[in-house]
Length: 317
Image (cartoon, rainbow, N blue to C red; front, side, top):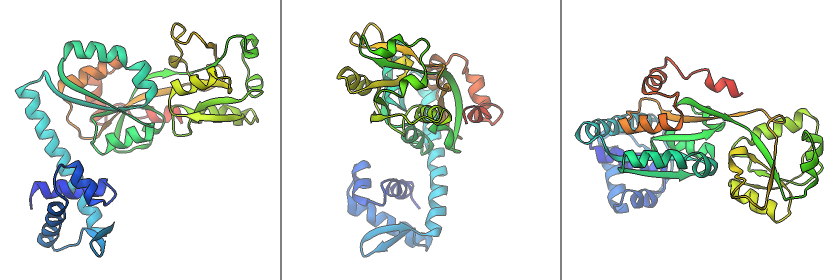
């Protein structure tokens, strides 16, 4: 049994049983991947993948159990590499973060700026997507940490660390009637077309919940995963926007006005998700503490050991 064979079967499973895609991701040739998988199956005397001719069409029951073990084995292999890197060169390496557009665009820039000044030799990668996508990447070990809201609490393979609470505002063009509503009410908001986040995105469930509790049906005419897209269509006059308060910048958004809506909706909690059992290098701890100063190394280690960080997810349900 070779380590490379384990890497091959994990990548094939991750790529939806597409051997060509797995080979491309691993920068190798498809026949070599297929051959090594066959050799591993022959050695183990079990079939890991179900086949229809030459095509992989499913994972067998023993294959599912093997893949679960392989995930753990390869995570420990990755941890060994990180331990080695920590002691050979603690100021260089790679930090991969999965997050949403709102976090990447509005919450992370000052943190990244300070971090890069301290660790210029650490290659920082931001992968943007929905909260569930970010959490999934962290749970699989594809990224080091996930930063998102709501959906991140649904993954049992992650340790969830609460960072900060935030709420929403309503943005509209200058002179819009909503600007005269003091205080803003859901009854007033529901009279206008609404542009807000896609169902999979940041805090959308809290928006839906507020309208449902009031017995109101909002006229959501357009949804997006990107706060800047929402603001663009508000500027075009297609509706009023409901978005995270952090996404409105008075100096930049000169064609828009903002009305506080934090009294209308429950607050949301942004969290960092870390895969259980992951080894974190020193600069990862420092990045997290820059983002959320209360998350010191000792607090993170307690949460990772199961002595802290739990019960946080229940807060938001």
